[in-house]
Length: 272
Length: 362
Ligand SMILES: Nc1ncnc2c1ncn2[C@@H]1O[C@H](COP(=O)(O)OP(=O)(O)OP(=O)(O)O)[C@@H](O)[C@H]1O
Ligand SMILES: [Mg+2]
Image (cartoon, rainbow over all chains, first blue to last red):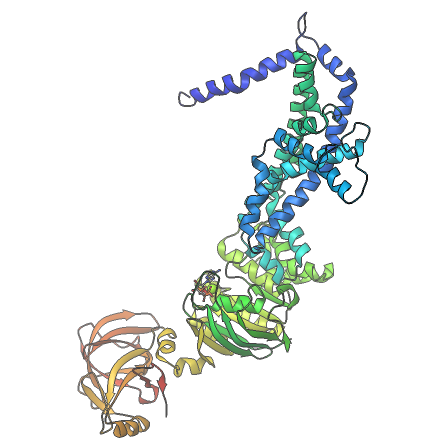
């Protein structure tokens, strides 16, 4: 008890206290505890738009990222020439902060950006990719930037997971008549399940918090939930509603993580 | 069903300078049981992996049933394999592990279940069908690997030490069982083992490997009785063949350990021509008989160690400064330090060139 006491103190100070004060703030009002902050949050015209955008982004982005990451990881496992170089190239975005990533892609998609210059040079009309009335192209821009920025996290986890699987299993599957897709479906993916689970939880939770990329690219035109938190806090100067929003994001993240764990639970009591 | 024809296989692993297989050629007839035998690291697994298509050779070719498969992926070769590391899928129960190949071949469900039950029964795995591999012992896991391979009815069956992890009793059981099954299936079989008793009892022919090459290929009894070189004689047999330095004189006498007996015709002739010939004399422990000291035609020797084995007694004997093993019936009573005479079974003596180590024959 005495030995773990320091860590308990630290945990309380660094983690517990801000959380408690955040919760209090979310329910706090001029005359004691209230749910008024949540009502205000839900009545804000941007709120449901931001929820919709966030969910749409997650639903479209995560499958794309997993397919991409898996494909790249399998490619590296096949050990073509220079595969170690690929690994570093694909892992680079991991080191780029989300705001920086957003700014990089802004130079591509903005009205006088690289994309429009390329279009112009081949004689096509330039297009306002990020204009608020072009929802589809705005969404695509945010999606591409996020996929570029955050796939490497999934990739690194999947590569590590693949490396821990001995080649024997895939070889055995091949000998017993399994082609590439059968091997992937019946052997590699099941063995990769723990890594995929980790990556999925991490990636989804982080996706709920996507914000800086969209902010850099679109300003307020493509609202996301965490962006709204930021707006309530700095723009509207209402810390209580901001806390309420943050609390909602946290709750949804936790429910998702538990849901994944339940959903992807390994039926075998003793895997590996 | 199909024969295997291997021609001039050379393989060097990346990052290694030594040839893992060095110009191996081997023809296995349809339905034949071929055993690969050799010390650790001699390239047995490498050869098997190339036949399976898991590795590709640098040079040479492999054909199965007349079809060149050298660079074909494993799934297109219609073979099945027991891996040295078992490679039993950890995320599948024993039942679905055994059925894996059948599922891939889209065998109808009824037939699949019948075959799995048959294989499980044969390998005494029925009580474990609904367990995961992690809940099995090493030997049980190995049996799952064997079961998974034999349900396939493949043209070619590759087995890499499939019984290595079983206790002596089970191994004896399964050895006979395996021989029966393979005869029933009629698969062409390549079987790797360290255990030469297994090799002798199972094989139609044995290929003894050494440093990536085939040192001798032949009927197991031939390989045992007439090893092609000193390595094979020393590797096969328990205890291994005894080797004694000797010399055939110009007069046609064989001198061993300072004593002389008569040399065989063909050696006497070549010794007469060359004026004496150094030879390596090889003789197996069970071909040496114990007699009283001084009996004519025997060599004087001293017993150093007596090891009763139950079915026989193994003696370590000093013969003029060279140590050899002698196997006698367990009824023979000797004690260490006893001075004895040794009679070699003349027909069982083998001669080897002292330089090339190759067997010398008429
Ligand atoms: N993946 C590999 N990379 C590099 N060298 C290898 C590899 N696999 C085997 N070797 C080398 O090739 C040689 C032959 O190995 P192989 O596995 O065929 O031996 P083996 O006869 O099966 O031995 P054992 O009876 O111990 O299984 C060995 O010297 C080994 O070190
Ligand atoms: Mg081996």
